[in-house]
Length: 204
Image (cartoon, rainbow, N blue to C red; front, side, top):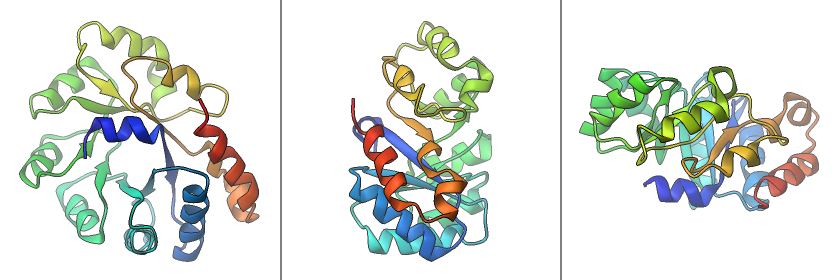
């Protein structure tokens, strides 16, 4: 797992799992629309079960465990079958745990100082979060100067209208977001609508 793999994925849909059956159906829909990866957050009690079931159902899909905030959550996510982990921020304990376990971690950053902290642990790819709130495209352009070898997966505030502007930046490898998985679409079971938005996200 590396950042070139993320670049080929293009978008990383973020699923907040409500129940296993719905999450599996969502994942099937995304896979059928050409997506190669997805993130299942640990924000709910069913997160780990959903990771386990989706990985069993779609073994070729890259599954990220999202909202991983400490080493214990990292261990449980990896044990459930997650291919990599995504965090809203970074701590020394989490960075050290990922390095010790040789696990691919995409930690959230919002400043140059946090990028430098991650670089001390050998990282060169980060999640810019919450992207729009912390400066978005302007911040990514600014960070490209002092950190020419660093790339980002901006997440937070991205939508169908602006994500291509992010993808056009040379230091962006993919975009994270939930615009194709709105609560209204999910609760109504509008799999066709979700599939259409997901397929659109994969078009240049």
